[in-house]
Image: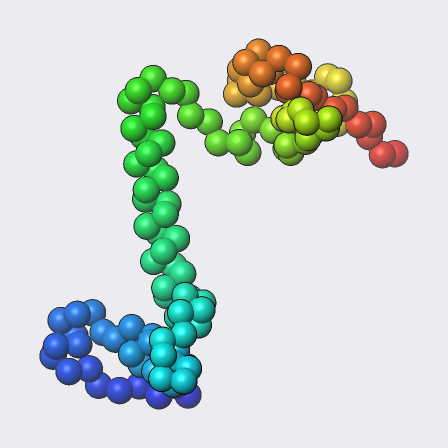
Length: 124
């Protein structure tokens, strides 16, 4: 069972204690702040990821307002390949009758030779 302590009114106002305040012996080493352990904490990681996602979404929305068409890479291709210094977007299809989605068709017309559809045979 985890040790739980009662928060003071000041700590409650701040939203509780941070992990490095609850467990100072883990996050300090030789009397100094151990940032590697601090940033390895899951609550710190989650907050950093949430901030990064928020910034990326805001930037994406700003680019849309400027007239860009923003499509996530997972909607366009399966992999990115590099050969002879040339980068290609690779889409793997089971057979030649498999249709491309609208986003994939847009990417194929935009990238031309740099968008390659690779067909592979079905296993029987």
